[in-house]
Image (cartoon, rainbow, N blue to C red; front, side, top):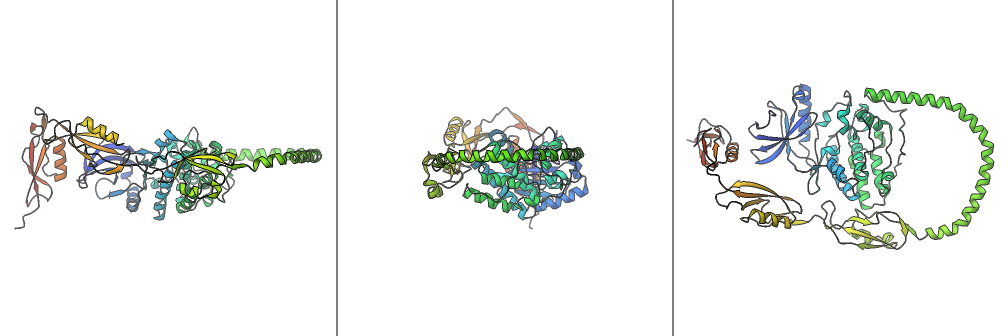
Length: 571
């Protein structure tokens, strides 16, 4: 059993279960006795906690991370370095990783990819503005809540990874797909490295494929350094040119050619969302090997050898065939000149005859514009669209990821058609809000049915109640009358019978805080009564004594009185 489970850190965080584990830390779900809510506690593993330099860097970085305050970044509520353990406390969130969603849904619609990518970019901009580089941006570190909200996690921990001395192994395969070339080479990184990683996430969301893959982490890292990706539009033709330019500009091998910061990339992304036909002055690289002549080699031993051998091999090959090419070119020159002249005349004659037909036909052809992500009002006011196409609105739909009044999908998506073609669009109604119905005192079956009919998910929690008949609802959370997003989960507290014959052991809670003691006794099935009294010996807020001695066995539902200190008497 893990040594932290069941432990209370700093008389506040009750560790309940492990919810995640990474290379340097373990994350626990814990109950915050003071705030009375669940939190996530990330504790450094022993091998890192014992290193003074690492602890110091972790401490300094954590203080900076705690300053981050953005809706798309997991909130850090507490950090601790004074005691035996080094840990960070964050908000506890329930959702799925973006990687899980990509594996299930990719290739995604342009709208959905923009929603997720735009929120990630907003989080990175906030961090970059404060001088914090994530350094491990990947979909595994991005949580997506049920309502589509993105939460970027693992700020700070990843920034301690020393790529200057690290060796990439197959254990790094999940990360190496998203690292920048400079990270693979062991060079210094900055916010442009995060931009590169985000470019890969966009690529994967829209195409359903990773730009670089291989049998090992080393082979993937090598491709990150020396190969350009296949253009996204070659995998999925409907991807707009402007969006493709944004992605590939973010994925430039040379950081100097990349977006200089998240703010700059966000500006282009906003321009594209406003006009899906916009194009940018960026050269789109061909899908070929990257020029390594001015590129430092990787620090990974096996990759370094591979690069060196390949480079030497190419030099010898070029030197050997250079003389042969010169001879062949001289011999072909005379024949080529006469042949090209005759061919040119024949082509001109053919084109002259076809010109009239082709020109007449092409004058009626128009490219379908990308309307997804644009406001329907803006589209209907655009004469270039309405003069050439008939815009027909299908039944609007609720969509948590798309703002009300904006287009979710279109049919056809892309292509070249005759002028006058009908484009059918689906417009978003935004997030569907529903009211939690009043199911108090109703049977569990009826309550769950009514909540389901209100487009709400449910989670049943059983609880003893002396006032509510067993099998009936005590309360809900959120409470009835609350307005929540459709599909939200409502916790339903259902009354259960008190088992008179069930015997329970009374926990010994003397000296514990009132919150901790009450929680432990209630979990044991006892009814807690609090009596406050002054004490010169016991700290305020802690239990002086309990009416039933600890470790005694009593019937479930028995009342137990806790005498809680209010501190020394004022007299």
